[in-house]
Image 1 (cartoon, rainbow, N blue to C red):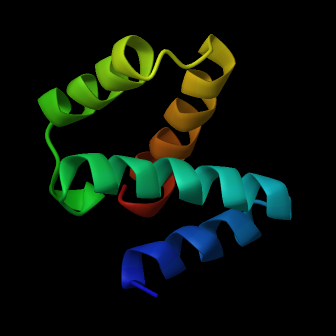
Image 2: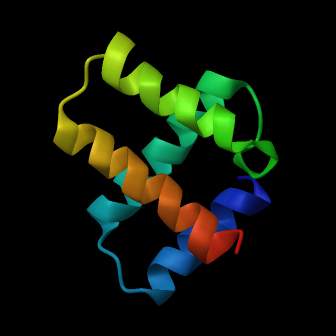
Image 3: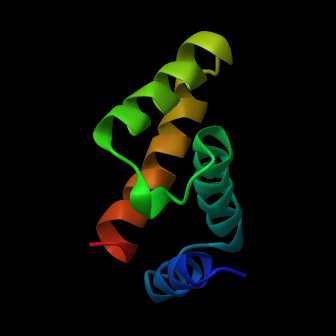
Length: 82
């Protein structure tokens, strides 16, 4: 387990998030890392924009699914990476 993943799990536990939220948010960040082939702490705003364009245009995810990914990634940047 990477240090970033462990820090995110700890932050979610401290916020009292449910196990299902843990799974969803971790999957969102994992999807971002797989798409970019880089650690999320090394990404630019353009990388994030391209990822969300990919989710909406290429994968054609429902708005609720995109929002879930957005919230998981946002949590990581605001609560874990500051």
